[in-house]
Image 1 (cartoon, rainbow, N blue to C red):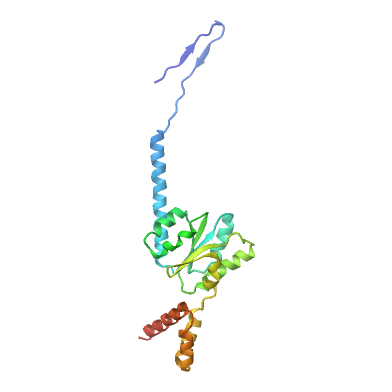
Image 2 (tube, rainbow, N blue to C red; image 1 turned 90 degrees about the vertical axis):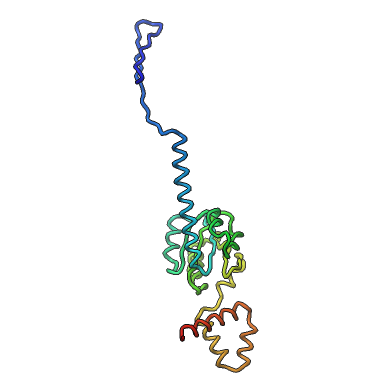
Length: 213
């Protein structure tokens, strides 16, 4: 134990008594190790969460997150349908989660701060519409989509009109029935439509047959 020190200055009339000071400190190396372990665990949990959401998603989109307040983010989450999950995660962690998957096409989005929208429904326009309404209502023009991946293809911000105007399942089904039940010309017109529309029509028809079986 450190003892008290009694120092006698040059003037004999003044005495200064110094008492010991006790400090309990965690070694710096140990503190850094603990923080590093916690940080690594959180990163692993984030990557795992992103992977889980990717597995059940039909579309994943990035939204410019910078400038959004915590309240705005909470309001946005409440406005989205149940088929949509919104996560805020660092680009590096999302990049790690998408490695070796069809979602690697999201790499052009890996700039700035992103919130990630995981759409777990085939009704893409209905899933995107609430954010457009939220963005317009709160005048968040700068917080636009940074890009999205649907069926392995990347869509830039200027291509979102394609995703937002895709036909719904009901519309595809009606179009298919009209083509099959109507004149041959109707079927030819369907087959001459953009490849993506034809594929969606055929997928809907196959599902109908499966459901009936």
